[in-house]
Amino acid sequence: MSPRLFSPIISGAFGYVKEHFIGQAAVSVQLMTGIMLHSVAVPSREWVCDVDSSTSTGGLDIPPIGSLVFVLFPYGISNTAGAMILGSFFDYRNDKHKKFLNAGDEGKVIKVFPGNLKTTYDRDEQVFTVEDVDDAKLLIQLDKKNKKLLVTDWNDNKITLDSSGVKLEGKSNTVKLETGKVTINGNLEVLQ
Image (cartoon, rainbow, N blue to C red; front, top):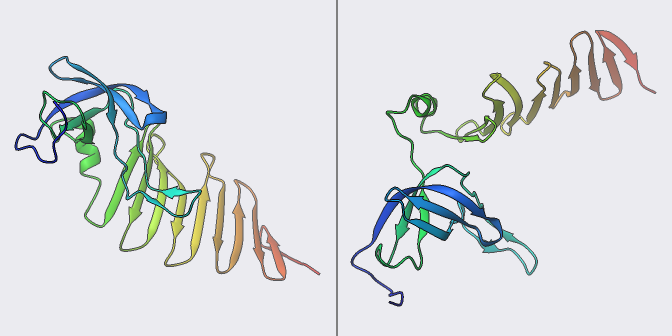
């Protein structure tokens, strides 16, 4: 059966990712029925366009092995040509998912990566943050409105870049760089 432009029977099924085909932007999926599908396309998460002859833009996000995904069959489940992953879903009955679902709101885009690094983009405030979910530590915060960048490591050392200059804070020392001067632990050092 060859693919048709329109099929009155579009269907889909849930399954788990079993293998990656990175060079093809595809994965193998084992459906809940036990059927194994190979080379199921993973769509871009953003519009793909050619910027010039050498580069393209877009956002490819290959689902991790073990992810629950929904596979769409545009030509019916009996014809796997054109099958693609439509997305993945949170289950409000799963305790781990509940915690994540309750953390967001309409003005924020939240994503947790394998390894428990969490990114949050606040559309209204124009602030992008990266946090370690396990340690509940802010690692990077980029604030476009206030033109400020804050970087914190797991040892509470901090780097702040803003309109007043650069500030480096360690456990026992603070260095602040401003135009024409350096302050170390509150003592002014003048640069020539």
